[in-house]
Image 1 (cartoon, rainbow, N blue to C red):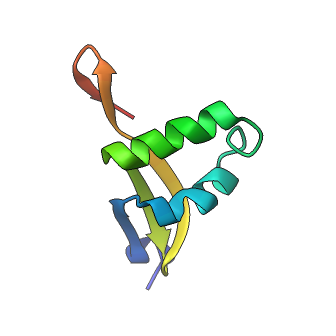
Image 2 (cartoon, rainbow, N blue to C red; image 1 turned 90 degrees about the vertical axis):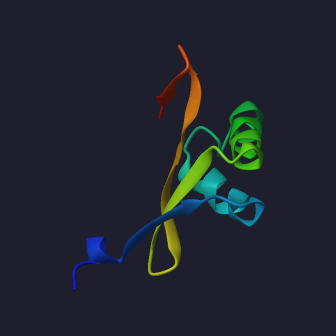
Length: 71
């Protein structure tokens, strides 16, 4: 079975914040970016990708772009 077949996407939760901050090169150094990520998690707009239970990436889906979904 390939690693991609083990990929899952789920809503991010507050327990994910520490790992999200380490995955994001900007968040590692900028409080404003960390605050954005935390707000997105709280709003249910942040999703994480996992392989084998390990978070490997994230995305934020928001609707501030002319009311359309934007990642």
